[in-house]
Image 1 (cartoon, one colour):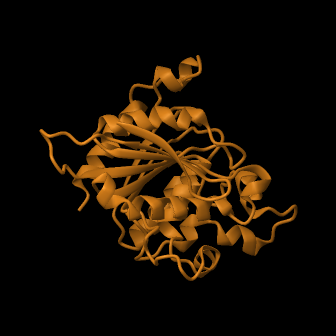
Image 2 (tube, one colour):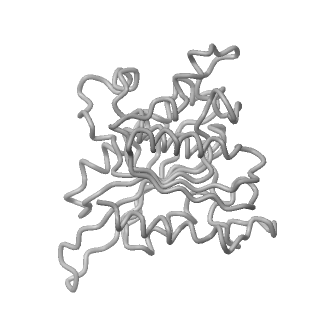
Length: 268
């Protein structure tokens, strides 16, 4: 396996995990996963980075983990520009890395970033930031996996996340509307796998439900799992990411990884 870091812009760092080719499996073509950790756009959580990478590697995928701009550097939704550049890098190296499809997975605010990538990929304001020479559509994932995602900036929101990407002390309603993912679902939105817990105390479940409702209305392919119990930030819901907190280990919720892998493999 090759592991290396690719600088995709001034602050965006993409760690690449590329499976070796084998004479026994010549030219085996794999799916790829772009991992987008959470952290309220204030930081990128280690719990939602390499532990996630290892699971999708074990499923036979090539995996890429993006450390994007956070805090004051996130203003103007710079993380979405960086996620788009990461997608561009992966797509432009598909032949070299033996990749057939590219998916993205995001957690909490990283779920907002992931959902934005699948929904806003061709929005005029994003294309303007990317520039005229950016290949159109290269940043659209083949599907997105959203874990306890922040999605709505207007209702049931995690306000600190949006304040970081808006970058204003007194945002307008228009600012919040622009970054509410569920309000921009269209027939161009990528397929979605969503999971959350109903008693998440940080990001209300309404974020996932409203997005699923809009996806259904648009006739988009999606799968939604809501488990009854579990705190915010479960990550793998296994011991490795539990930081010693018993409630962060949940055998039922931990099934989201194999469920998402099955969904990816079955997606047409």
